[in-house]
Image 1 (tube, rainbow, N blue to C red):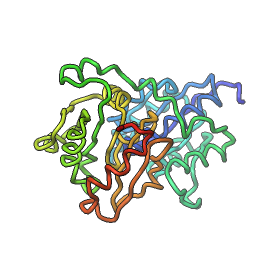
Image 2 (cartoon, one colour):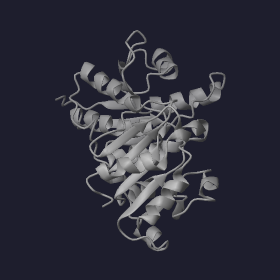
Image 3 (cartoon, rainbow, N blue to C red):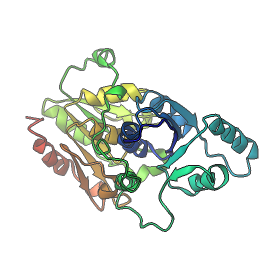
Image 4 (cartoon, one colour):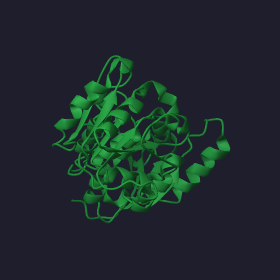
Length: 303
């Protein structure tokens, strides 16, 4: 294990699921460099989230401004220079991050994937390979401790009359990927409630329209930590290929993530322990009955 102190910059933009997959990687980096100062460069929307991550000391927002916005590029460069970075770990491996390497960190130790490297089977496996190549032992990448993210939401649930033993449905997805949404969550909620189950429907920003005809208890407007608390208290989670499903998976919940033809369950690497995936060529053709058949397999959670 390295004993000398380093100022380390970790670059990770990506979507919420990608950022969640970096948590275990951050833990492994911190474990290998226990006395380091670790700064994370990420999208502005994830700064509040990662500021609470115990593996991270500082967070810097990168809005990925266009190249021609020289003023913003200079501002970001100055913020990074103030950290006196000794080592950069590039978890993004994008044209932008390689540009940062070329122009800002050309003389700084850099851990990242080469453009000549073969594309990894999945995002997470690629990050693990990156650590392996850099001789950083991998212990937490697949099973990070997410307890730091969970906030008590008992008041939120009690106000809605929700007791213990509820099921969370996640019918939404990024507005840029509406084709990821399975269209039958309302019918699933109806059937689950007919089985005597409490159903909580979690909606993200700009997803209020999904709750208009949705049975169950609608919960929206949660921050990252309240969302994690909601998922952590669930006995089962069913969602699309979206960030909250990744959170549920890393929280070791029983659940199911539904994938359509535009994404790959294998590449998302969301399945683990009791969190399963189902992948179909036509989301509209996937029936409620087929989804329900998957649920009893989760250690009898619905029995």
